[in-house]
Length: 139
Image (tube, rainbow, N blue to C red; front, side):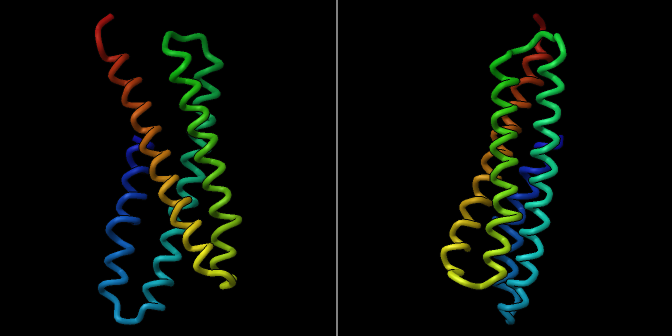
């Protein structure tokens, strides 16, 4: 459920809420300020969810249990990549956007990082769904 919430929250913010803000609000600076807050929140959410996925992947890998070692490795790698992208966004890209210099470049990098976070959360959701369905099937 964590991966579904994470993926859905990023998708809703990026595809629905932020575009709606810019279409609905006459004052674009206000829309930009609200969008900035949403992107900071979603990046913090990504940082927490990616961290939890890494912790869970390490914990599951340390336990002797049946299951695909490749799936566990994939979840760990995807979680680490999501953690890296989230950290770069939160502590690298967002401060540069706020600083205002070379704004077009940093907005483009921020958009790319946001899409990567959404794709990685979706990939983790798919990996988790595979694991759940595999364990639900009779052996």
